[in-house]
Length: 113
Length: 116
Image (tube, rainbow over all chains, first blue to last red; front, side, top):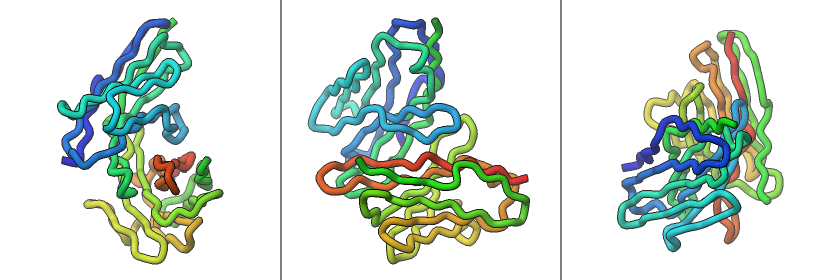
């Protein structure tokens, strides 16, 4: 019940295209759903996060869509750029309980020119 | 914003020796610190949770005698890999929950441990 599932495992998108990564969770106690971006040799960096009281959050080219009833959320990267090539992790936690962050298995994104 | 400083960023040690990794919260008090391990091309897996002033809580399958965690103060948590072996080579990352009304989590920059 603590798992966070993520797909696809890898993704290749052309420059300017839309990258979409999907995640699903089971634990309805989760109340914080962040996405992290990680470059090789670096720690994960928070990209964008959403809480269950909204269905969508947009920051620049990055949008999270959240479906509470389906227990699913997704990341959309608009106008994908080669610099977006990285590994993306969705995650979930019981933030208000200061509980640990549970990470999805990750998606390796390659944006080709 | 909240910053967690993690050192060292890279360390190479010989088999059988011990290595200490430090995480310091620079501008906030971290009563809790999460320690993660990441193998190449894999996700971050929680190893243990440290709380200031009490014993750390280890995840199933993590040897507490091998991975010693000390949360000595509200700004410092350390992970010591004792009697390191090549299979302990990994990327170790700490993370602290946010503070005040602005939640979220702050991650250290990670430590690449190579045991030779």
